[in-house]
Length: 79
Image 1 (cartoon, rainbow, N blue to C red):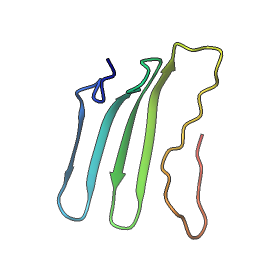
Image 2: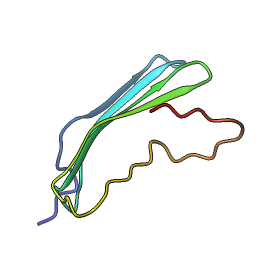
Image 3: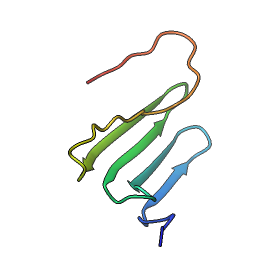
């Protein structure tokens, strides 16, 4: 049986201008990939953080896109 909600934590808050959203991800079709992801929204920008990326499938690399949105202009990547 495949569960479409294998984790129970997801939530967010906004005051109408700023906000935060967070999730605890565990793959719906496989439990081999999991991570924590959060978005922080400010007046004219947002920050996305990903942590705790784990996999039990060591034969495959893990690639994660922080946020897939159309971006116009310069972008900054910190590592």
